[in-house]
Image (cartoon, one colour):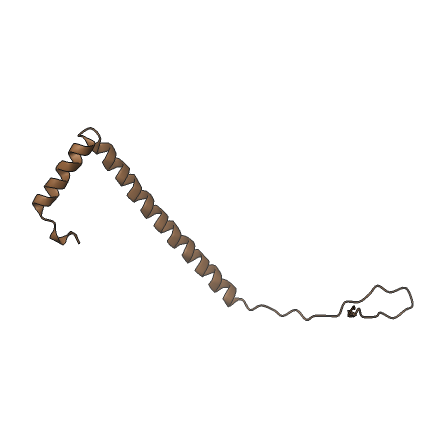
Length: 93
């Protein structure tokens, strides 16, 4: 894309930028572009770190086998001397 730009084209672009922004604004423009690039790089590195952390957490959870908890029927409270009865759902309607 930029391979076809020669020295003359670059000088012409620089002159146009100088006319539009003026000589006093060029340092501020360069500083703003530099901060934008630095912020972009920082956000890319943070996103990579978050992604690596998520992958490490996923690998840790995959390494630890999960124990199966046996299901037991729910028992209704009993009075003294009566056997426990299991609670069953009764269809309505």
